[in-house]
Image (cartoon, rainbow, N blue to C red; front, side, top):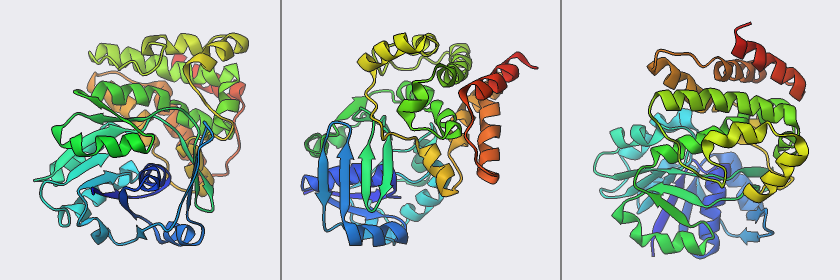
Length: 337
């Protein structure tokens, strides 16, 4: 029996760990007292866009980091800004040889964990789907996808457990192109958060899609200049995504229905963070594009502008942007006006 700890169990952690626990894997969740109380009262309910409806009860949800001490596999799902603190907490707890997987947004979390967790196997992973915290212990997977992870022989003991849970592991010799491909899609997070709309409603409107297209086109140009080729995660190659997003609504809908399943409940984590009054991960999404530009001696004005708009939304009154207003703001920024 493998023992798995989910460290920083919020939306993604509760969903991934819950799917594993629902099929009999020994899972301990570690996170905030608020969620510990919520799951003690309601259990852990997991639903998805395909109609799955699972209830896990009882749930072993702890608030002390020491609960990870005996784990063979630790899934780190804390917000990216908390990665260093999580690594320092785990460094004194985990047994030698334990496997640690970063299932977080951004590109650098695996490196941070690897630098601090000596004598452990640290792997970078990626969760390609959205999870909505619906409250009352209920978490919903609103878009399609399994799990992507850096290849390592030590994963052999865990492949079956993830497959049984309905979250098969796709293993990659080089995870960075996969992370960049996911980040290209995640550039929609600030657009969605600023729209204050469900994901499918936002993407059904051409002006919002054109906002995402501008941010993606800027990023793709920087990736090409840096010699980085993002992986192909969908039927549409990454370099063609902006053109697809700019299509008229009826053509986009026809094509999108064949490439990406999104149900009406899907929201982005950035929208959830703004709604809850928390700091977002915009620095670890659009901020990665800005850092890439700086490394190349260039600028990324559109992605930098989206960071500024999210920062303003974090600190001030939150009002949804219309697609036309947001597109006008980003277009002016891109042209230097």
